[in-house]
Image 1 (cartoon, rainbow, N blue to C red):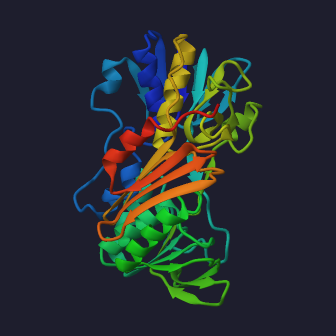
Image 2 (cartoon, helix red, strand yellow):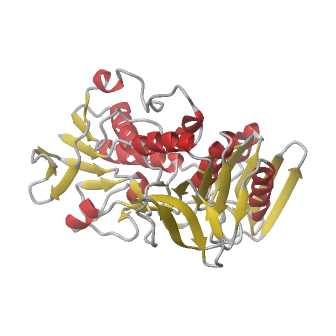
Image 3 (cartoon, rainbow, N blue to C red):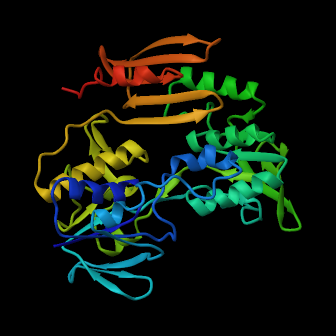
Length: 385
């Protein structure tokens, strides 16, 4: 039986890893659209941008992993179609590959600007190694940097840019940074720290257009009429799951490929995991699409156990982390519908612990610069009754 994996990110590569761990002996083939071996994406918005020597990202698996585990990986080979009747996927060069089971682990693409001036040189996005290399080159050439979006990736890029001595402005449409992922307590501490480092924030602000000169960005124009100087604009306004293959294959989609608890789609021979999958998360208590390393690894383990017929791994609380100018931010659980927050903060040491409760049950935590606490708190977050 041949298993084909479309996508060579954390989810796809770890699916292949867990298939071997669970005893699968058949053929495994991973297809990647990129020309480099699978790599870790989180460092691309952090240390990679400030490194003068790193020529490549940290690999997902050590050299020899694929050969040693008899996993075929085809680089620079985008899959463009699925024939569900024949159980065939086709690559861009016209070749066909048969599958018994197909795992879709396609990434999410950066949400792009559509305003006037969005096609000017100097407007950058960050999702891939090539994006990161391009952004690193442009950071060297730029004095003023505007980051659109005050989410995790946007603030990581802003932190890297100000660390390189750039004048940095973050434009965020909501009243606070990281509004979707952290509590006001964490958001306020992060913002205060980054402001102290020299980053300027424009909150409740909307970009209306970009002005340029000689084909290159020069200014961002806000709805208020304010104009902000910009040699470089980094766009971090979210991501969109890549659903073209799933849609063509007539799979059920809804802001992601809809899957059951075993990561199986509406076609029993096709699974979806990672950024592209809309799956029920027991801690969120609903169908949700999460773009985190933890979610990708969890999905990979579940799909491998399902295909191999082994017991499904016990669920663990969702988690994320970020590094922001001397702040190690970590989150656990599902930060949703809480009715009580317990906050402990030390502004001098930049330490924070937030416990979020719902009906006296701990549902989520976040810490800053308390790395050992996350492990201790993880066991206290229980599944809803």
